[in-house]
Length: 436
Image 1 (cartoon, rainbow, N blue to C red):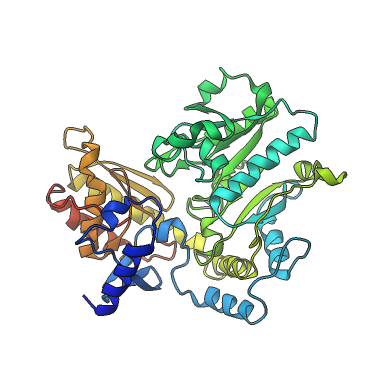
Image 2 (image 1 turned 30 degrees about the vertical axis):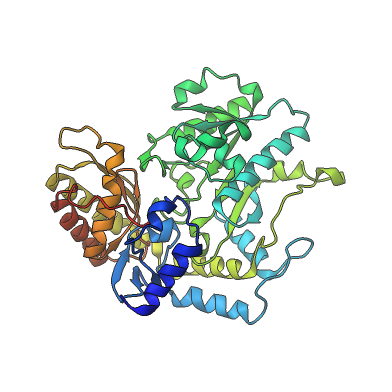
């Protein structure tokens, strides 16, 4: 190990606190986390010079690959003007143009307003607070509850976390957020009294943290109908699915659904800088006009950061220039074929689930039963895959495969070869936890 690698690891283990990480294992003697130092296209390199395919798009954010010249140039150009200016009482060209572009993806007089923040959780928080304040300002304050779906995930800030249905993320704080009713299906909605519901929140087409499980086709349109019938806001969390992941720019476009709130983050800047956006309708925006107390008193210091807006505009330019969505269709089919081959070849692969360029590979014992959770086979598989040049993370024992949209057919084949080689080993051989 190089001396500088050793120094970085020592400093990290002495002072850093990582998200979703068992810190006792992270800092244990002998644990050597990867130190990632650079990227190009779909590839990342560590401080020892080893190369890996970025199999989960740097936690589902990277769209066009690392170090894309168009996005890098846009950020450098903006740096020469201003790295940051306040959006509280001021504006700047990048934010105005980006808001116009985002609204332009939807029919006129539908999603007309954009509120910028900085990550997926805050995009959802904005939608929740706007929904409740809208009710208060339209004489419907009794509508103070939300509907969310079991096993869903919408972020980690307190309000967003209260929507979540995954106990390991929300269990310690479940009673301290919004009033939320969790359901599992459309049928369960019929049992609820909608007059107390402000909004219904869902990850459209596929639940991410729920081991990549897709919703039935037509469910989104049915939810739009239920919300219309019961005067509830439809809030779509497209933090993961937005910006091409499902094969269209936004997942809701597959069923021609326009929500009342659309929450975006992750891929909005192509995976380069933190930025988020909450889109909503002119009708909802109108309730915040008039009296001073009607204003939406919420925001962040780095709201609409000019560097983030520059990166986001450049990413949209790359979508158009490189015909990203048009080129994605055959890659989606290549992904489908590769997943099917893995399932056919390896008894450990219990199921493969795909939505566009999003995939989950669920591992179970050959008899179909789940592995004991304490064996953590998903982590062991991901750790072993590094030796074959693939980086990704599991969700329990489901391996996520979600590379950048720019990934080539040959690079997809590299990912499948890495997983094939890893699955060919007895997964019980290496049960060391993956670096988290």
